[in-house]
Image (cartoon, rainbow, N blue to C red; front, side, top):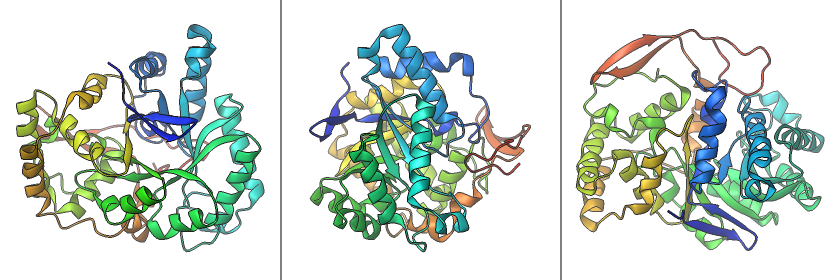
Length: 379
């Protein structure tokens, strides 16, 4: 099966599904199988999912992607490896106000050079700027520094991450060619429809939506399960999206949504998660979905989205639930910034899971990372 692609610029296209790699970061969750990682990543490329999303603050991810590409090149050849595109992020002084205030162009150069070294490449396919605190100046200046590195040949294309319309427009007005904005977009978080999508369509910017599966909460596993009551799950993605479910209208409304998705999925012979993905992929300005994975175990469900066409009846069923949603409101990521939610992300010792159709509490060992690299480091 051929994976559909979207042409972002004349010399740059992406598959409509991008492999997210936050899930293979040391500070995201336990259970990354280093020995099997190459085979899992190769399975995505072989299926046509040739774009990998990462970030300079994802502990170990850039290096792991670099090691994968090196081995893939050795085993498959340079031409095969050249199909792989890595979209990394530049997240300056993440969650450190003093560091962000002291941020200078030299810092940008140093981190980009570090990313090049970690991934063992001469040019980064895409760098997505995440300016996480708009109360501190520097977003435009940093984007212009990245643009200068682009002209030097260190970066191919520039994107944004979690920008709202007001701040994204400043980059555009400064003359920076932003090809994409990576934003949270799911059935429970439709803030991108509150002006961002229309702005992007006018300015030739494409949306990369993440969180369409809620870190795994959009699955049959969680259908009919009682409300855990607090964000304390197996990994920080699940915690993040549980908070969004509360913004959406709470666990009971989410269960109504899962039931509707399950009904539609059964009619089409696909997984519940596939229906959730297809709905978001069909939204205006959405070029691709970023779907994170520690392994290739759910790859077939991921690929099934390209064989699914939602009917008017399907969409009406979904929309009837969405009509009762109370949020989240506002522009992309504004609420998350206001409440400083990134600082809440953490791997806890005790967490909720599902076993035999029931909510259970599990225990695990939690080890702090020796050298600060990203965030969620609190043990």
